[in-house]
Image (cartoon, rainbow, N blue to C red):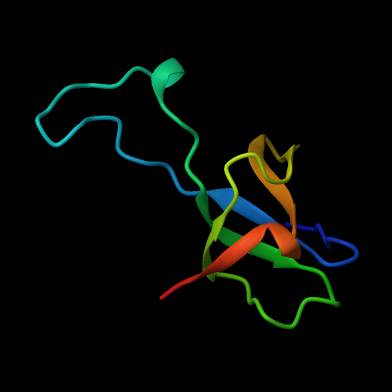
Amino acid sequence: MNFQPLGKRVLVKRVEEANTTASGIIIPDNAQEKPSRGEVVAVSSEVKELLCGDKVLFGKFSGSEVSLNGEKFLVIDMEDIFGIIK
């Protein structure tokens, strides 16, 4: 992918959550909350804390959704990322 975020921003791909509950009930797409976790795909040159491939938690309404090569991503400010999932 040829996308380089500017400023203190990162490009994140959401990690899809399971669409069934522990008891086996299927949750329709329109009733599911968007996950607040994802994988870093690209980082700006100003971001030193994250690397591509890091798994992160971010605010539910963070970032701007963009479509690149038919896939959906989020461009998120570093201030909106809560932390790295180890």
